[in-house]
Length: 635
Image (cartoon, rainbow, N blue to C red):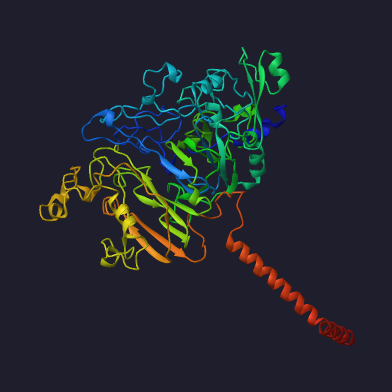
């Protein structure tokens, strides 16, 4: 394979932007922005797992408990568990706009245990005080670490070592930046070769990457869909990649097998994921992005909704464990177009001075290390699991929670609590999987209900989204209720032992003894203080039609604003917030009963039309001849 012929194409997405701060944040699944258990509004370490380039205030705390007894041995950490071939709404916000006066891309990828690395992990808190799992992993194998679980790990040590031994692409535009090394750890955005976990900086900064990557493509969301054929063709989902390993002289950049081996290297082919039986189904999409407003954190233009991509989760023989969702973001300006190579290095410099048309010399704020720049966020680990046998062919909808404890100023760059989706349209007979995760390592002083620093959400049915108190009809489980008694109890209580008065305050203690305002007591189950960080309810089958309204009793207040959910159930499927044109389709879908009925009806209609045509054949012919005669006479 000769790479020289495709280098100009590979440079099309050498990330370029004219704005320094264009942060990107994942909200569902929850993005870390390199956080772990630091109990401050700003993260402690920007180098922990990956190079985000984001503002330090973003990101959600690790999904772990902070036990009352302060015993680190009792700390429990949790993961979300999604069923295969369900739709997961990926919710994200970008600081700046996409599509107006610029080019932009959102690159969504994921990877899981074994494909990405061995023992992929978030990092486990070592104490209840916080800031105990925030260090970058030492540059060693796990077997050489005394306590590897203290450190988060995505890519593997060996992957980073290969990046250090691989020559960087010398055809890239570097402007006036002085790269202090020749390996793929040095880029224009990272000229000093700083280490961020075990991420490879060159692979991070460019897409599609010319060598191999452990990240599986989900979607490219772009304002320029003319590039989609190129993206799809160059994705490792569909195309094998190549690398040259073992070179002693990294100043050489081999682009073919002959050059590589002539200089002592080994030319290695890395199979496309579609050819890898151990990899899950690769179902890549390339779609047009919706335009968003400048400085509105990803809110769509003429819309009140944050940007969302609906990902149909892959299928695989085995459960996919310790998966990570990865999001990168880029916006581009005319000063550094896609086609720039090293031949254009002299066309841009730091803080240039220009004479304006009025003859006024002005200095511009340009940093060439950032003028072409990519931003990134990654989720905490989650699992994609096989469905139970009885739900193998059922439609399952995911309902999750996004948000962070605190008011709008305290959670800046994150968002306050909400359900994802918060307006769900489904069909009678479908299933809903209620599942969410929080953390006990939020900043201690942030506003909110219940124990300081904790996240909890529950669901209670209400009669209308206009009310913030419970209606007697919903509490007595009449026909207005979507849920039966058992599931209503579980969703409201989060399985707290409310019948045990030694563990939870009784109604009399809460009401008559004013224990309701004892927010720090673990016994205040009315504030969900005894509930676990992670809540997961087995999928519930919906057997009623109508509109139903639910709220979180703990977070639906003037501190954390509004956390409500509307569920619309119909006899026929409707467009829903969680299934729309952005859903990447499953190519293995089967004919459903409704599809079969529609086909039969269509066939019967066609047969009827044929019979009618035959029956009136001669009448039609006579009418035709009459029309022809009348037309001829007029001419």
